[in-house]
Length: 447
Image (cartoon, rainbow, N blue to C red; front, top):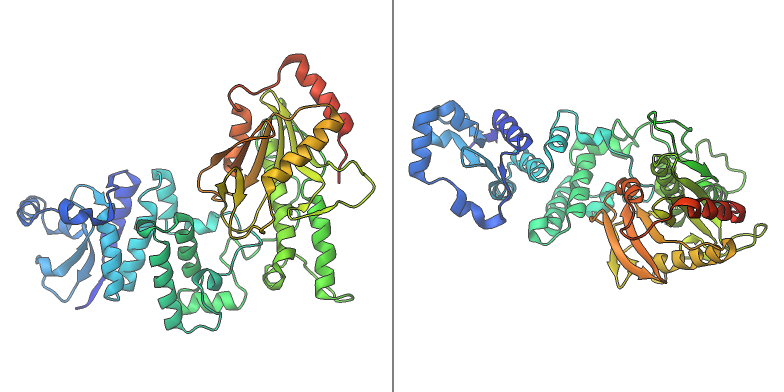
């Protein structure tokens, strides 16, 4: 058999997904949802072989035209694409070594649950990866994601990839975020050419020229920005640069401290400092979009000692609040965090594989907020831990009440909308808003 990918059928499947003509059924439903032989023959007689071909991802050009033997790997019921059919095809294609069909089904499966606009982006000839926000400085290498050494053979790499797919597939109990990471890792090193380019230090077009250096200030849109004070990410960048030079060695010239190839070799603790700086800067840009009704103070000290060094803590800067935000929806205390891995909630605290055993970011934020609140004679109305997109998989998650304040963990793309809308029953208005702003401004000291 010489079955190859039917590219016309793949494009037809993409079009169905983009138009929303899909059935999001379960893994084992295809045996019941697939058309019967009589229904298939009736449809074929009415629509012809050309349309029949469009519903099959496999084509064997050695078989005669206008025969069913020529076409294989059906993915729908001749009206809609079925998710269960695509899942079945993915498994069969991998089992029989049809790599091009297996890769195509993976992409269809990933996109079948997205919105039409996102699907069009994901399935366009230029992959959505070209527009993706660069990974965190803490991001694992594709070899680490697949669980192999950089010296693994091509066969070992492919076996590891398929093993990781089985482990992380959402329909077998895996996490969608981890499943996506495995797919992205394979895109980087899955072929001989891609792997050779990655090992040479090359990266996708969107990341080859990236830099973790501070971005130049820019104004986006015409809407007036929120008033802001302080230098987001500045403290972490200072610590990063000092420790980077200590790690490299005194007297050794470092032309670009933000070179991704240099950072890939740096200790995790060092990369974490840079990740924290970038996280604060990204959050600051999101908060700037709130408009003139809001005021933001960045990197606000909470230890009361403006001259001394910040005390150590598992979170890093133990004596500061990353962002203090004031507006009609209340007074918010925020920490911007990036651990390089997703986190989850357990008993009102954040936990995850990348957090230290003694790390308690929610408790830490509450302590810092209380310290500053007493000094400024104000009361915080909300606590927020801001994490990167996909950091929880939930968007906005309530952590309950912490020391009398509602606490949440929020993925950054949802942050501005949350702060504008506020939490029901929480807010500040009228002359109270002016009074709180005056007190915060008088008490704010920056790191």
